[in-house]
Amino acid sequence: MNNLLKQLPNEHIRSVLFRIHHQSPFGTFSSTAQRFGLRRFKVTSITDLRKFDDELCSLTSDSPFNQWLSHGGGNYMMPFMTTGETNKVRRFFQGEELQFMSIHAQTLHNRVWRYCPVCKDNDLDIYGTSYYHQPHQIAGVFHCYKHGCELISSCLKCGYQLSDLDRAPVPPPVCPACKHKMQKDEGYFDDFMQDIESFCLLLNQQLAKFTLNDIQRKNLNYIGTSEADINTLAFKYRVSAWNQELWNSLGKSRLQRYFKNTKELKGVTMSPTLRTPRYFLKDSSFNYSPPLVYILAMHATGTFPE
Image 1 (cartoon, rainbow, N blue to C red):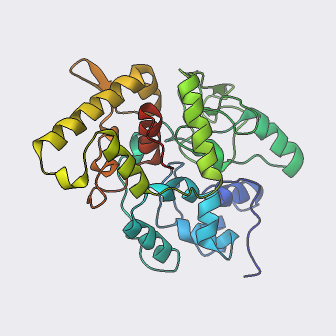
Image 2: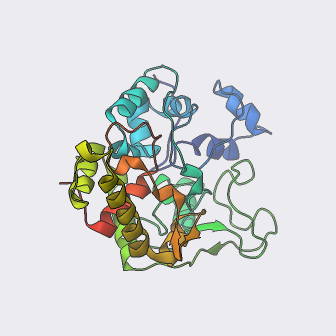
């Protein structure tokens, strides 16, 4: 393919066309999309897989799957897929219909687009435009991977959030709604969360060597049981105790920063997103859960795959 669009360093694949539209003379985003054979579409910063991801990756690379790995969150997602899901994703990028199903992605903190103010200014100087960096959008990350700055996603004056790239196709200098200065999100953050952030950014850089099966074996060993016991009461009790340990270890302040659906259960703060049989069962029919679910459990219980 010799007419690929130029993608900027670490630019999120879903934001490329919006940035190009921002730089173009065409009046509407629909006009820009039509120039590249696409209909008008909405994008989200959430790390999952959507039907339009293959088309967007194909606009910027002759290897859409590899483009998704490095610019769409694929490196971050793949280690937590079953073998069947991995095969479905590969076939999707080879032209088949998307069969991949995920759950709970909307419950995480990264539901809106985020940017680093230093990156924004530097990108303007170097490239003549600001743009949305893919590493800034990862769940579990609250700071810039380059500068360590708290990321910006909203206006603290009017509450506007960067959820719609039609309105903010590139990181805005001021709030698109009230023209007030956008401010950093300075919520709760501790050393444990710093470790989570570093781990998430590392995963995002390249495919990990561990698999979901490795995670499941570690977790089964941690609770002192095996998959042969899954239909026993003892297994259910141990999983229940493991969930309680996980919630208590993570604590209210962290969980409320990571998840949008926390609630109190018998005096303990929890998130339903954290409850998945995929922690333990390789043959579970439960849909794909966000990577952050497993990453938090690994760090809270020390069950890191080798």
